[in-house]
Amino acid sequence: MLNALAHRSYEDMAPVYVKHYPTKIAIENPGGFPGDINESNIITHQSIPRNKLIAMTLQHLKYVQRSGQGVDIMFQSMLTEGKPYPEYASTPNSVRLTLRSTMENQSFVRFIAETQDKRSKMFTLSELMILHYLWEHQKITLKQAAKTIQETDDNANKVLNALRDEGLLELNGKTYMLSLKVYETVKTDVAYVQDKTVSQIQAKDRILEYLKHKPSITNQKAQELCGFNKNQTYYILHQMCKDGILQPDGVGWGTKYKSVK
Image 1 (cartoon, one colour):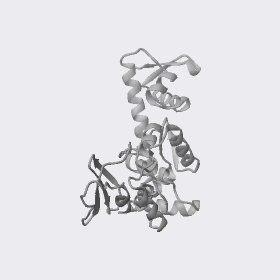
Image 2 (image 1 turned 45 degrees about the vertical axis):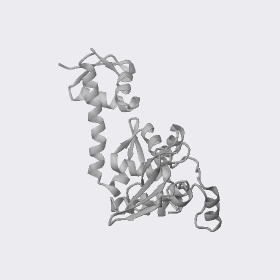
Image 3 (image 1 turned 30 degrees about the vertical axis):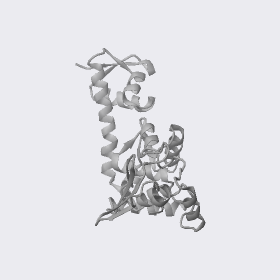
Image 4 (image 1 turned 135 degrees about the vertical axis):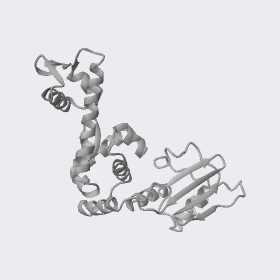
């Protein structure tokens, strides 16, 4: 509501609408997003209050902590409580925010609360967004992480590595997934094995598809195809040889692998 008052257009005499439903609340104010703010950068873009005097007054009255924190707080609160992201929809003449009350997963909420207690600090919004994405999608690439948290690749990489250092994520090829200890809390150890195995099956399928068109494949080329590092790719190729699917030609890292027909 406070955001709606500070960012609405007062040139348009339309009111701010607050619509309360059994499972959601929607707030709509006149005036589109100011400047170049949009749905894909609203979390990290510097605040541009359309009405600076109102924003400063709200801050002076301690109704808001400081300018630019409202969106962050909404996203962090919703994710911590296991609820869907705040949903923004805009036109040139209005902005609508929808907050849904349905809790998506109680085990995820419990995991966040227990982990924050153990680490004695709150998750940052970026960390929460990546963990939430992985809970829904099983794996995430650096590019997907950067898009999700609305940050640069470098900043996304720092967040991913920090979560990995804490033992919450692990690297599977060039994609990140939740670690086994997280799966045991929010899902199951069986789901962990299933999701990890899917990546290896996909890698084998890509190698076999490549060999339909080429006489052989090297470890380096397989790395490009599968997104795995050198040792992970060697493990996949070695397993395919043990299973009688491939036949090695040569020794060492220069070995070429051919399909067994």
